[in-house]
Amino acid sequence: ELQGADVTLPEFSVTATENAIMLGALAKGKTVLRLTAREPHVRDLVKFLDAAGAKIEEKAGSTIVIHGVSRLRNVAHRIIPDMLEAGTLAVLGALVGRGITLYNIDPHHLTIVLFKLKQIGVRCETGHDMQKGNYVKILPRSGYKPFKIQALPYPGFPTDLQEPFSLLATQCNGTSLIHDPLFEDRMRHISELVKMGARAIQCDPHRAIIIGETPLSSYEIKSPNIRSGGMFVIAGLMAHGETIIHDVENTIDRGYERWEERLNELGAGIRRVE
Image 1 (tube, helix red, strand yellow):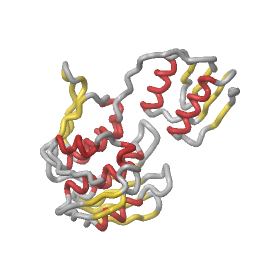
Image 2 (cartoon, rainbow, N blue to C red; image 1 turned 180 degrees about the horizontal axis):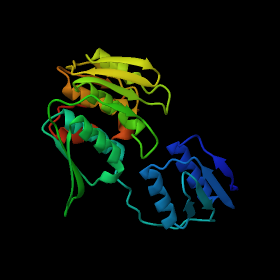
Image 3 (cartoon, rainbow, N blue to C red; image 1 turned 30 degrees about the vertical axis):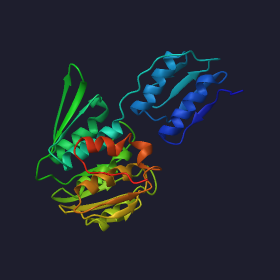
């Protein structure tokens, strides 16, 4: 039988927060979770569990108090849009083709991402369609400005979007700095971008300097992880020649639903080889 506890989580870890909330919802007694992540999908999980009969209190700051219940009831719930997939597609729209309109998203979840895109020079328009809901329209332009980003817990810049923004930096006019202090080994994609023609330096495990604007060439690579894999698909669309990405089922498929099918609907030329 699960017992309530006072738990300090690994600092702002999304997965640890979600798992602890689900355990606490059915644990006996009171569970107090400290240093919880505040990402929209964490709050959406709390909304779902509350509707199912859980007793969860979100305190000021990053503390959540849960009073365990014996059981949860059936409930219908609509999952929120994936802000990380939307952010990756926004970078795609800034780099490839004539632009892209993303429907059924919550622009408030992308506040810092859209702010940085506008700062760089990408044209971003938000609005509401009566049939399709909220949308963000991304329109490319020339002469992107270099930038600095530092990954931070939500509502800061998402660590999972620093890879796509690394690719965007290769097409900016000047020197950009990418800083991700949240996790180790998040800069493995930099050396692979260099092999595609990028001018980039990995300063240490957490920082990279990227100098643009540089054309990219085709490359054959094993997808390093979920977010890098999604980014390298976009890099392949930009590059001259044929780019081959391996191990997509263990990386890209875990983070992006029907990635190549949906991009092909936009005019990409991607072929999956079993």
